[in-house]
Structure formats: structure tokens, C-alpha cells
Length: 112
Image 1 (spheres, rainbow, N blue to C red):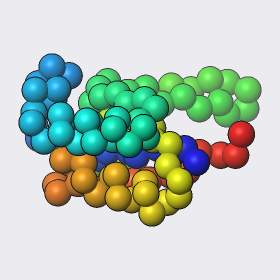
Image 2 (image 1 turned 60 degrees about the vertical axis):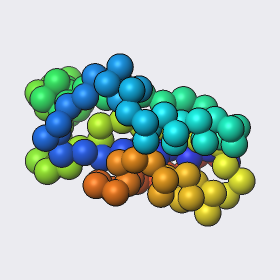
Image 3 (image 1 turned 30 degrees about the vertical axis):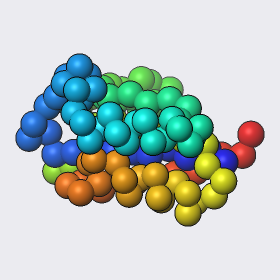
């Protein structure tokens, strides 16, 4: 089953992809997940200030800058993993370097 790991952050320290790729803890985590054959995709997301929210109301498109809700933590990146079950997804998420500082939300993909 595929799971989305949504890695939260507070934006206090913003790292570029090369800076993240140079962090030993992240490199070790990535190697472990790839060795399991579980990693399907992953990416860093830009800060919420660069987001646009789109809604359609009464047939009219409405856009607003930023995220829909005010929050102290935001999704800074995501990983898609293929796991036997939720327990394996939890095990993978719990070893992510960010898990010691911020929550990682795990959601199963809808059935194909």
C-alpha cells in the first residue's frame, strides 16, 4: 500500500535541497528507505507564503495568497512510500530526521 508522509516544519530554518541532501541524518534515512525498496517519490515544498489557494464558488474562481488556514506548522515536504502495512509506514516515518522536531502525518493513498 502506498502512503504519503507529510513532513511538517515551522519554517524557522529553511534549507535548500542541496543543504538537505548534505545532512548526514537525511542521507542515512534516505539510504535506509531506498534499501527497503519503499521510496516512490519525495520532494521539498516551498514555504506557505508562496502558496495560492483556489476555490470555486457560484461558478467563479477565487484565489487567495497563502494557505487556507493559519498555522504554526506547515507541510515542508513529502515522501511517498510503498509499505506492507501502516506499521511499516510508521516505522519509516519515525526514523525520518524531522520526526524528532515536528510531526509527520501519514496518510494512505486511495485504492487504485
